[in-house]
Amino acid sequence: MYRVIFQALELMKIIIAGAGEVGYHLSKLLSYESHEITLIDQDKERLIYADTRLDIKTMQENATSIECLKNAGIAEADLLIAVTASETTNIAICVIAKQLGAKKTVARISNVELIENKDEVNFKGLGIDELISTEELAAEEIKILIDKTSFQDTHNFEDGALTMIGMKISKTAPIVGLSVKQSASQFQDFNFIPVAIKHKDSQETIIPRGDTVFGSEDIIYFITTPEGVVQIQHISGFVAESIKDVMILGGGRIGSQAAIDLTEMGFNVKLIERDKNKAISLGEKLTGTLVIYGDGRDLDLLKEENVDEMDAFVAVTGRSETNIMACLVAKSKGVKRTIALVENIDFFKLSKDIGIDTLINKKVLAANSIFRYIRKGDVLEMTILNNVDAEILEFNVHENSKITKKIIREHHFPREAIIGGVIRNGKGIIPLGDFLVLPDDKVIVCCLPNAVPKVEKYFN
Image (cartoon, rainbow, N blue to C red):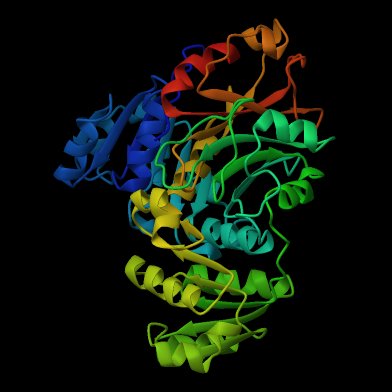
């Protein structure tokens, strides 16, 4: 989905071990920057899929093999990323790669305990520069989504100086029937800007302009300052809903960590776990959570546990189908907020069609997190959006960047892209046409995938 080209950056030699969704997604992100990418996996079909779609080198080998890593050029590698399905394999690959000359190593893990105790264990001394926990990232995403109850998708830039908010506007929203220009004049002193819209019953994503009309039940993404959040809730017809009671289905690492986080935030949490021994163990560990032993797919059990009185329902079992079906049941019982963990990235474009508020995919979260860790140049942040085919990127502006030479309206910025916000000296700004971007600013851009090559020229 992401397509980024930065010829001005120093190209890197990157080796990725693991051609699953995380590895493939990372390969796509990085290959479009013209880096030299080598993707290693033992699964031939995965490699064929990647090789036919990306401009990368593939190797059907075991990445724990010293000979394999040497043949891949590990001694000259700027970065080794280990994202196989096995955390022990990833750790081993990083340790070996570092000894063979890799400058930096990143390992994907599933055990949050390793990150929690990283100060006690010298992972860098072992050869691992960064640990990325998919479970921790997913639990953090759930915490943010539950905390911001009116929104389907959120992402903070620079610790909240600017925030991306995605939501479906109500039929009675004050902006329905108004154009962007009309709504801007009617609602004065706004601190936000719409950056992507998908109209009801349409699969097309559009970048709004002044004459774009807001329709009933549109899915809209905004960039906003902290002051604009309440304004967005007002103009979109949403009243901030009070979330107090949360039910979590699945007591794995994601579910248990989410329960801990939400309990600490003051929510009343019920957690359902079908494995008896695990349920007993969780009951002892999660002192602030009511742990229930049972099968969350059982409608009678959900009724007994008053699912209809829950404000939010989070399904994070190991099966996407179970999570989707359980959320649909919860939604049918009037639960305000439903969140489902899914394995298939393709589900992202279908969450509203499915009938679930938000889908999360831990592999995409991991890929984006690793990408942000290794990118120290022009692109500081990237994020995937639910329901729409658009990209949000945060650019770092250099002294000679083209974007600094004129005010915004005098640039021939692509029609398929929009500057949604600027962060200057830590403060978020919603820029208008007469705004001049300065060196060292950070600029948030929303664009359709085919417009990224045009957009990047303004930030070289």
